[in-house]
Length: 189
Image 1 (cartoon, rainbow, N blue to C red):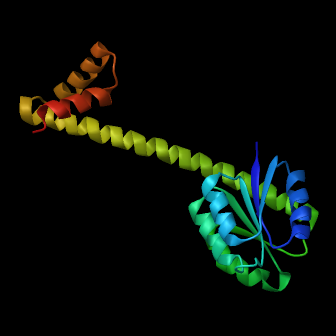
Image 2: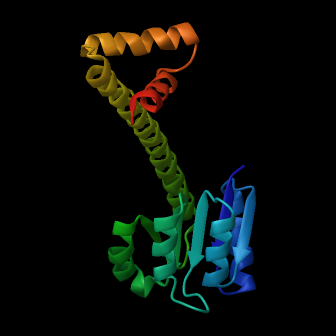
Image 3: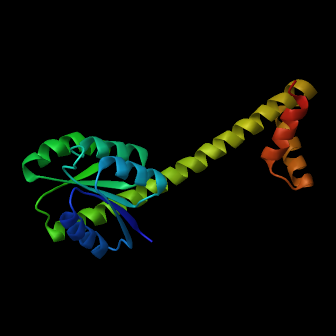
């Protein structure tokens, strides 16, 4: 289920933008009418898309879009008056915010949202891969620390320490990390 957060300043614009967003395949569109309520909504739930219709009643929307792009995993799109679009684009593009100028062309809006969805999917894939790599490195650090303790405390060679951890892992049917943690607990004092 694709979810969107719409931040706008009036009920009329909310209805038309929510309709446009729904037509793009977003099943749930939550609407907020102020920056503070949008920040709270983004903290409470994860959205695939956050669409801001600037200006907002309590701010111009630029700082909010920066903050949301920085603190969420959502695609952030801001809709701004055409006269300011280029300036705002120069400010927000480096932050990963997509800027759309008013009036909105349905065809272009469709392609902008397709692009942002594609971009978000790729970014999330990289973030997931990054998390897996971090976890792998953390595990390797634990195993290497255990090997070092085996080398220094029991005068094993690196190959012997490696083989010991692998053999214990197979014999006890636990992960190498679990064996390494037990080695660290036993020999680190």
